[in-house]
Image 1 (cartoon, rainbow, N blue to C red):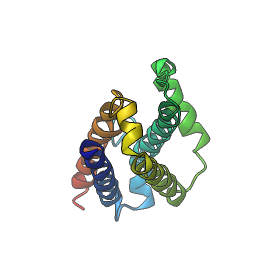
Image 2: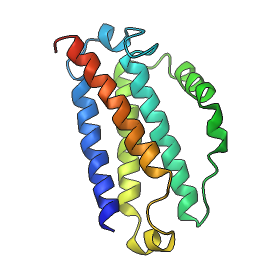
Image 3: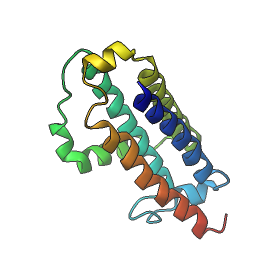
Length: 152
């Protein structure tokens, strides 16, 4: 399906843009608190990785012919806090690896879904644009603005 491949292409481009937005930032700049709201650039990257992981889970359920139950996500602030606490000891390199791993897995997963499955499920899930495109675009804009504020 053409619109799906467009989304996959957008995700791949966004991944490259995210990596460019943190390229050449020092460890101190990546970890500096309160630079993007109360978060650091590292926190934002972790957050984006977390939601890519949630999208992967949702696709696993969606492929079976069921709708994913997103009601748990009402507690997203607690989910974010838990992820950040768990990943607190990860190095910057590990955080970037996690982001790349989950984004790459999401791209591969979506690319591997056959047209027949997309059609049988009624096309792109309603939650997809908001969770993996709009949400990421919003955070990417914040990362770019932060990097620009550093004159990098």
